[in-house]
Length: 331
Image (cartoon, rainbow, N blue to C red; front, side, top):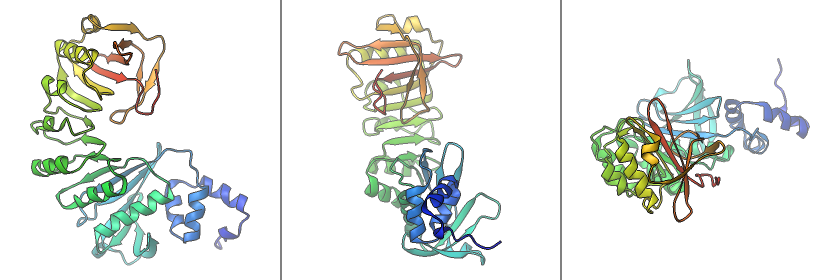
């Protein structure tokens, strides 16, 4: 079948074609020429939300990559050492760099080949973020050898990124938390004895999958905006102390809190607080957890601030969301 001269098509036809191709094809077609890059940028389907993941785990093994995700699909561009290049690789221009590229043999992603990852990851990221007009916070994972990636991200967009703490040493973790300032820290693989509490006045938002070394006193003295401590278990009396502290004006910055409470009893926890039942369901959006739908209680403070509060049984997962939420939605 002969090649389709796509650039010779009427503009309305071209626009319709570009709006129908998926994210993988969008990225690949954009590499054909600078003219095609701008056509894709202007006419692609922009209705789906996007997220970026920058994984700077290990360049020497060819594992560094940038993943572009939609709600239904994700596509990765790997940044690999030149020594791993296949003979079938073709050269393309990525942000001013002429580099080999080929499709991975078994996976749904593409490999690009570089002599230097410090050129490769930023070049791929700049190409993709300009093409897709991505201005949101990427999720970034690093190891001891790729800490430069955090410096690049912070120079590019300040604290507007989410740091994923993966399999790194305690020494490296301390260094990162002392010297870098992500908007959100996702402590996926942080050891439960790591003294994360000492950073609760500098971390803006923290999310953990497993138990973190955080006590009631640590919570009462923290300065976070969001805390998702789904792996931490507190008692009913400790939950009362947390709510009472908020009710008297504590937690000046706190917007969202999630934790587990053993033997939870709503009436015991709220008995000394000004609260009412919610009359309708409200969706609450934050940076450290999936969207939460509140439908149980509304707690009011003397200064007029209100928070939705509920406990998801049978596991005793408590959600506490102060209005407005992270996107400015009011109750």
